Image (cartoon, rainbow, N blue to C red; front, side):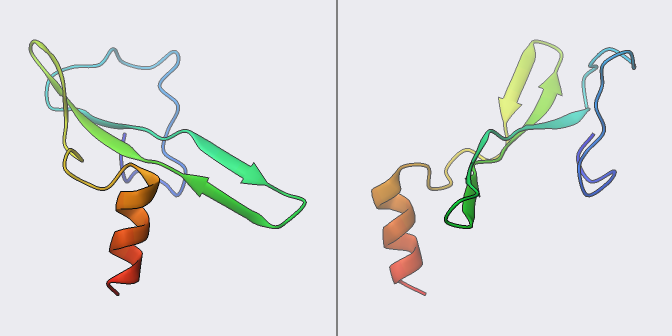
Length: 72
């Protein structure tokens, strides 16, 4: 489902997940009053035994993200 559109396709009613398919789980928080938001996107590949997080190793915690941003 990843990369099919700006907002990836909803799979409800579609084909069941099968090995080789790639999906995202990307919860977000939006503060509309102050005009900002954040999404943490994790990319997973479906395997014959379940899922594997392809985005493992990326910064996830606030201090990790701030450290990365400060180095740019």
